[in-house]
Image (cartoon, rainbow, N blue to C red; front, side):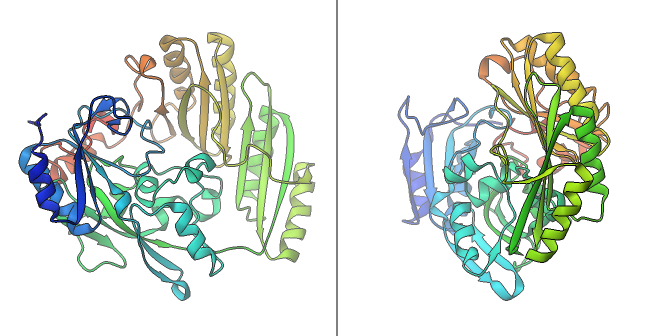
Length: 421
């Protein structure tokens, strides 16, 4: 990577030809850095052609570029090695197409997800992307949501966001406009680009447009809860997941420093069907019908946020590992997420060594990438130096090969993803 620290701002502006704007950044500008790494210039194109043109010019200048939407998850992942230009995608804020009869929506990357949900909601539909409520309220965009691939409660039944993406349009580091999947014209041979860029933290290309599969909003819902000892709650949650009740979500919440946990089951459908299934779930859990708990859909608190994946049966071990880490290292470890094995850990520790020890203990709950992973999404800068945010990763050589193919000069968000990609 041979990146310039003195961008030619005029040339960048000329490349847009009025299709957006470019401005230099002053030191200390609150909008002028990515996770603490300062940039020199910010470009805000207002069309796909503008993104292509300004990336072509920045690539020619050897600039390192990081895309930014609403900035609600800029501290997730690792900080970029370097930033010369921030590419602000909020100028791409159009809802291109909504085919209600086909349950399909096409939107530009800078459109706030809340705006998309409001639009399709008029037709009684929704994109099942249960991002944290704080991010949604802060304007999290379509592109930012795809780039960070958050996981919410209803992933259990409706699958992950990457499974709802029909196609994407992505601008590569050199300005090439590439497309993949449905609702697009030209595919990139050999790659399912829509799947690749989901969760890639902007390291493979700048997402500019995406098509999604929608779901009808269900007319009725009910929640059943049960609290108790951690192992008992995990076992009951497994029974619900494996049952014929077809729950929309089965969430577990285990507060820090507690030997107890709560399971909450969401059931959706027609009013009569939901009523019957809720009664069966309450009987199975020996629980009660309630309103959604206050913690539903929220990330657990703590100064470090980690994402943990495990097998259905491995959830019990993860909860046990969290309690053991607290007792060994004097930390707080709250666990919350899907009983099917995609959860988050909120870690509160007083030192970098304490955080590293807790993360290492949690990783023993899933001793191989096939059995699960623990990824540190967010941590204070003073705790990052000696912390491996990713842990063991399967297929790392393949990932590096894809990065080298799509961004050989490493000018798109270098270092933000696993293995320094």
